[in-house]
Image (tube, rainbow, N blue to C red; front, side, top):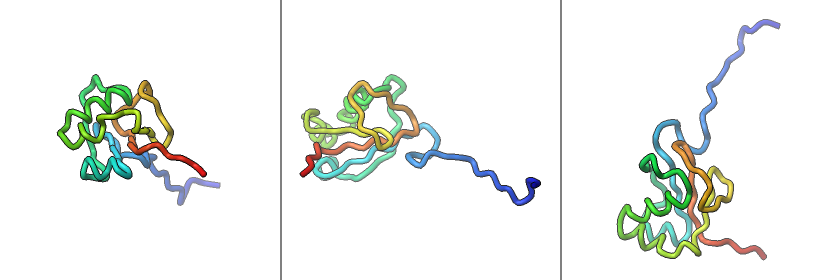
Amino acid sequence: MGSQGLKVKRFESAFCPPGDDMKVLYFAWLKGKVGIGEEAVTPPAEVATVGALLDWLATRGPKHAAALANRSVVRVAVNQEYAGPDHPVKAGDEVALFPPVTGG
């Protein structure tokens, strides 16, 4: 079988387009407090963990600061996987912020 008709597609992350941006998603009351559902951000190079990202996001304005004031009620997922404050983050990641979820 030859290679005629074979198409090769370049894989790109489904989370965030390649580049320097990180996609941040806000859910539930966090979305209400920040005033947006998502944003593309380019944090400084020293922002390399979830905790550092939250610290940096809190400096983006009074709405971000209010939303992130009590970190005990903010959960984080990086690329759709739960993540703690020491979890690494990098350009191209999708970072979701949401309140604790309970099951029934």
